[in-house]
Amino acid sequence: MENIEKARHASWLENFYDLIVVIVVFQLSTNLNHDVSISGFLGFIALFIPVWWSWMGVTFYNSRFETDDLRHRLLTLLQMAAVAFKAVRVPDGLGKNSSGFALSYAAIRAILVIEYLRTGRHVPATCPLVKRYSIGLFDCSRLMVCICFRPSTFSFRFLDIRFDNRHFSTNDIHAECVNKICSQYSSPT
Image (cartoon, rainbow, N blue to C red):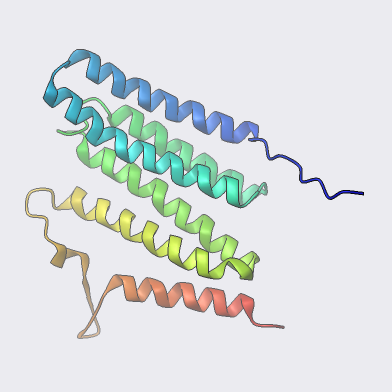
Protein backbone atom coordinates (compact mmCIF):
# COMPACT_ATOMS: atom_id res chain seq x y z
CA MET A 1 0.00 0.00 0.00
CA GLU A 2 1.40 3.40 -0.97
CA ASN A 3 1.84 6.24 1.46
CA ILE A 4 -0.40 8.93 -0.01
CA GLU A 5 -0.16 12.32 1.62
CA LYS A 6 -3.44 14.18 2.08
CA ALA A 7 -3.60 17.60 0.49
CA ARG A 8 -4.01 20.39 3.00
CA HIS A 9 -7.08 22.55 2.65
CA ALA A 10 -7.65 25.92 4.28
CA SER A 11 -9.98 25.95 7.26
CA TRP A 12 -13.07 28.14 7.45
CA LEU A 13 -11.26 30.39 9.90
CA GLU A 14 -8.36 30.84 7.46
CA ASN A 15 -10.82 31.65 4.67
CA PHE A 16 -12.52 34.22 6.89
CA TYR A 17 -9.11 35.75 7.69
CA ASP A 18 -8.40 35.95 3.96
CA LEU A 19 -11.73 37.69 3.43
CA ILE A 20 -10.82 40.38 5.96
CA VAL A 21 -7.48 40.88 4.18
CA VAL A 22 -9.43 41.31 0.94
CA ILE A 23 -11.34 44.15 2.63
CA VAL A 24 -8.03 45.89 3.35
CA VAL A 25 -6.93 45.46 -0.27
CA PHE A 26 -10.32 46.83 -1.37
CA GLN A 27 -9.77 49.89 0.83
CA LEU A 28 -6.32 50.33 -0.70
CA SER A 29 -7.72 50.10 -4.22
CA THR A 30 -10.41 52.65 -3.31
CA ASN A 31 -7.65 55.04 -2.21
CA LEU A 32 -5.85 54.46 -5.50
CA ASN A 33 -9.08 55.03 -7.42
CA HIS A 34 -9.46 58.44 -5.74
CA ASP A 35 -5.85 59.44 -6.46
CA VAL A 36 -4.80 58.09 -9.85
CA SER A 37 -1.33 59.58 -10.03
CA ILE A 38 2.27 58.58 -9.45
CA SER A 39 2.07 59.68 -5.81
CA GLY A 40 -1.23 57.79 -5.39
CA PHE A 41 0.34 54.66 -6.86
CA LEU A 42 3.43 54.96 -4.65
CA GLY A 43 1.17 55.43 -1.62
CA PHE A 44 -0.77 52.33 -2.65
CA ILE A 45 2.47 50.32 -2.90
CA ALA A 46 3.75 51.69 0.44
CA LEU A 47 0.58 50.49 2.20
CA PHE A 48 0.09 47.32 0.17
CA ILE A 49 3.51 45.84 1.02
CA PRO A 50 2.84 45.60 4.80
CA VAL A 51 -0.62 44.18 4.10
CA TRP A 52 0.85 41.59 1.75
CA TRP A 53 3.72 40.65 4.09
CA SER A 54 1.48 40.26 7.12
CA TRP A 55 -0.93 38.08 5.12
CA MET A 56 1.95 36.00 3.70
CA GLY A 57 3.41 35.49 7.19
CA VAL A 58 0.14 34.15 8.53
CA THR A 59 -0.42 32.01 5.43
CA PHE A 60 3.09 30.52 5.59
CA TYR A 61 2.63 29.69 9.26
CA ASN A 62 -0.73 28.03 8.65
CA SER A 63 0.70 26.03 5.75
CA ARG A 64 3.76 24.86 7.69
CA PHE A 65 2.05 23.96 10.94
CA GLU A 66 -1.46 22.61 10.76
CA THR A 67 -2.59 23.93 14.13
CA ASP A 68 -6.27 23.87 14.99
CA ASP A 69 -6.58 24.15 18.76
CA LEU A 70 -8.50 26.72 20.79
CA ARG A 71 -5.46 28.94 21.46
CA HIS A 72 -4.58 29.07 17.78
CA ARG A 73 -8.15 30.04 16.93
CA LEU A 74 -8.17 32.79 19.56
CA LEU A 75 -4.84 34.14 18.30
CA THR A 76 -6.20 34.06 14.75
CA LEU A 77 -9.26 36.01 15.90
CA LEU A 78 -6.91 38.60 17.46
CA GLN A 79 -5.04 38.81 14.16
CA MET A 80 -8.35 39.32 12.37
CA ALA A 81 -9.18 42.19 14.71
CA ALA A 82 -5.81 43.77 13.94
CA VAL A 83 -6.42 43.35 10.20
CA ALA A 84 -9.87 44.93 10.54
CA PHE A 85 -8.28 47.81 12.47
CA LYS A 86 -5.78 48.12 9.62
CA ALA A 87 -8.67 48.33 7.13
CA VAL A 88 -10.16 51.21 9.09
CA ARG A 89 -6.78 53.01 9.06
CA VAL A 90 -6.14 52.67 5.31
CA PRO A 91 -7.77 55.99 4.37
CA ASP A 92 -4.98 58.50 4.90
CA GLY A 93 -2.78 55.59 5.97
CA LEU A 94 0.34 57.58 5.18
CA GLY A 95 -0.91 60.64 7.03
CA LYS A 96 -2.87 60.99 10.23
CA ASN A 97 -3.77 57.27 10.34
CA SER A 98 -0.21 56.03 9.85
CA SER A 99 0.34 55.27 13.54
CA GLY A 100 -2.77 53.09 13.73
CA PHE A 101 -1.83 51.33 10.51
CA ALA A 102 1.71 50.64 11.80
CA LEU A 103 0.42 49.45 15.19
CA SER A 104 -1.99 47.02 13.57
CA TYR A 105 0.84 45.65 11.43
CA ALA A 106 3.01 45.31 14.54
CA ALA A 107 0.20 43.52 16.38
CA ILE A 108 -0.23 40.98 13.58
CA ARG A 109 3.50 40.28 13.59
CA ALA A 110 3.65 40.06 17.40
CA ILE A 111 0.80 37.54 17.45
CA LEU A 112 2.65 35.55 14.82
CA VAL A 113 5.71 35.53 17.11
CA ILE A 114 3.52 34.00 19.82
CA GLU A 115 2.33 31.38 17.32
CA TYR A 116 5.89 30.44 16.38
CA LEU A 117 7.00 30.28 20.01
CA ARG A 118 4.07 27.99 20.79
CA THR A 119 5.12 25.76 17.92
CA GLY A 120 8.71 25.64 19.16
CA ARG A 121 7.43 24.66 22.56
CA HIS A 122 5.26 21.81 21.29
CA VAL A 123 7.45 20.62 18.39
CA PRO A 124 11.08 20.81 19.53
CA ALA A 125 12.41 19.81 16.09
CA THR A 126 11.22 23.18 14.78
CA CYS A 127 13.33 25.26 17.20
CA PRO A 128 15.91 26.45 14.62
CA LEU A 129 13.13 27.63 12.28
CA VAL A 130 11.09 29.06 15.15
CA LYS A 131 14.10 30.97 16.46
CA ARG A 132 14.90 32.49 13.08
CA TYR A 133 11.33 33.49 12.29
CA SER A 134 10.36 34.73 15.74
CA ILE A 135 13.44 36.97 15.97
CA GLY A 136 12.76 38.41 12.51
CA LEU A 137 9.07 38.93 13.19
CA PHE A 138 9.79 40.47 16.58
CA ASP A 139 12.30 42.89 15.04
CA CYS A 140 9.79 43.85 12.36
CA SER A 141 7.09 44.43 14.95
CA ARG A 142 9.46 46.46 17.12
CA LEU A 143 10.50 48.57 14.14
CA MET A 144 6.89 49.43 13.34
CA VAL A 145 6.18 50.42 16.94
CA CYS A 146 9.29 52.60 16.96
CA ILE A 147 8.28 54.25 13.72
CA CYS A 148 4.82 54.77 15.14
CA PHE A 149 6.01 56.67 18.19
CA ARG A 150 8.99 58.45 16.62
CA PRO A 151 7.94 59.19 13.01
CA SER A 152 9.80 62.46 12.49
CA THR A 153 12.99 61.79 14.45
CA PHE A 154 13.34 58.06 13.91
CA SER A 155 16.82 56.69 14.40
CA PHE A 156 18.18 53.19 14.76
CA ARG A 157 19.60 54.09 18.17
CA PHE A 158 15.99 54.13 19.42
CA LEU A 159 15.78 50.38 18.72
CA ASP A 160 18.20 49.61 21.59
CA ILE A 161 17.39 49.62 25.29
CA ARG A 162 19.36 50.18 28.48
CA PHE A 163 19.06 47.54 31.18
CA ASP A 164 20.85 47.51 34.57
CA ASN A 165 23.43 50.06 33.40
CA ARG A 166 24.63 47.59 30.76
CA HIS A 167 23.77 47.98 27.12
CA PHE A 168 21.86 45.08 25.60
CA SER A 169 20.31 44.86 22.18
CA THR A 170 16.66 43.82 22.40
CA ASN A 171 17.47 41.33 19.66
CA ASP A 172 19.95 39.61 22.03
CA ILE A 173 17.37 39.55 24.82
CA HIS A 174 14.74 38.06 22.50
CA ALA A 175 17.18 35.44 21.18
CA GLU A 176 17.99 34.47 24.77
CA CYS A 177 14.28 34.00 25.54
CA VAL A 178 13.76 31.87 22.42
CA ASN A 179 16.80 29.74 23.32
CA LYS A 180 15.43 29.19 26.85
CA ILE A 181 12.04 28.13 25.53
CA CYS A 182 13.53 25.77 22.94
CA SER A 183 16.05 24.25 25.34
CA GLN A 184 13.42 23.80 28.04
CA TYR A 185 11.12 21.77 25.81
CA SER A 186 13.65 19.98 23.63
CA SER A 187 15.57 18.39 26.52
CA PRO A 188 14.49 14.82 27.31
CA THR A 189 12.35 14.51 30.42
